[in-house]
Image (cartoon, rainbow, N blue to C red; front, side):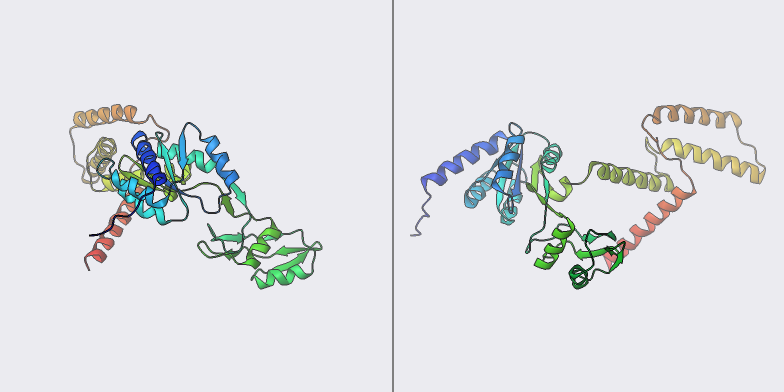
Length: 315
């Protein structure tokens, strides 16, 4: 007969507490506390007090608690593999994921790099003057592949140079050069791994996207979709007005070319409807882009790209 694993009273208490917290909060997530000083964590907790709880439980207890809620909370079991990323803390809130992520990201501060850390982005040494006098520093820059020259009695860096690529481990010499140049590529703060909201897990990279960049991406996606819809003459609320315009222009062009006569009253009525639609549509800044040759070319390019991808997929 298999012997049951002993569960301590402390772990049972933790499990009951976490189970209760999971029931009380609509948004559940995980964060990585690796390299986060205790003092910084306490500051973040204080700033988010009343809005989000940051709790650290035994990893096995957390797994048991998350697994016990899989039938009640859609997608919660998908958080379990994320527990293996660094030192996990569980995040609990009833506010929106993006709102909370914005608050967390605002609480981060810059820090110098240390040997052994992973570069969070491409670390580039920019061209330009430095405060260093000619001497041993020229050799140090040279060892790092950084080309220099002397200008105004000081060392100047000739070209932008990538010192460390994103994802690579920073070595001691690279960390030393960055420190001397005052470059602080690291961020000290709570690193969100993912947040679960209404069955969807938003990963940390998505949550850290700049709002302006995110809105620009939405606008680009809308404009490209609109271009394709107009190109294939797909009728919708957003395309009907430009499609009517396009039809009128093409009708007039055909009339002129072939010296044909169309029902002018019908054309005027279409233009009248088109103008009424335009008044309703142009409420937001910029309105809906006008259909033109450039938009048609963009649509054709998108369609060709999709065809190529479909061919590759079926090979």
